[in-house]
Length: 287
Image (cartoon, rainbow, N blue to C red; front, side, top):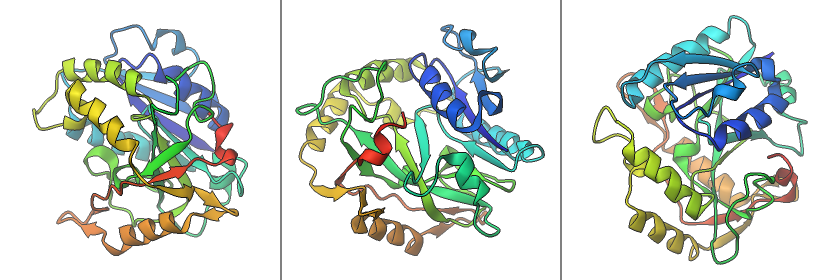
């Protein structure tokens, strides 16, 4: 069996989307939401739908969050063969040309791997071509492009206990890429992103240095979307059933330049190529 885990705080739009997707993938009874002090009522209707565990909140503390979720997800391996951990706006997909879903993927787990690292893709709105998002319809049917970015290359499916680095970008496991894609929905809509930024700017943070990308000014956010329009397009994510060779070259660079921290944990250096890839049809119907 496989479990899916996320931690949330006031995410009224994403909680139902996350539950719908991962519930279909692994079963609602195997979904765990750690509610870190939600106070807008957005989790209330789901407390009898999935497993909701409430923990107190004083402020956003990434170090504490990482330590807790490393231990919690590792402990679930006593009952589950594999555990998925993602943020509430992160949707991981097993290559739909090879697997029927995440359960099928983990049933065919290769060798003695401890975890698999996702191919990180930021779903990216081009406002000149695409309308404002409608949460009532399939998200990927409304968006055509994604940008590869290494912070979304996360060891997100584990089969052995793990110690993640802050932000879940690295861990004490070997970095292994395979047929797992992560579609990250932070930059998928300009206007919704502005609303979410207002929330995250007003949150209490443990440190002024944490989460700076979640607290930028509206002017900066708007400029980013202007720049997205100028990024060159490098073809489909998948070409003739295989990963786009440009994407493959990015993954090779990730492996070649990986960093071993003094703690022994491995992570991928920051790499954010200003290129776009077209989201191909095999992904469109998934969420």
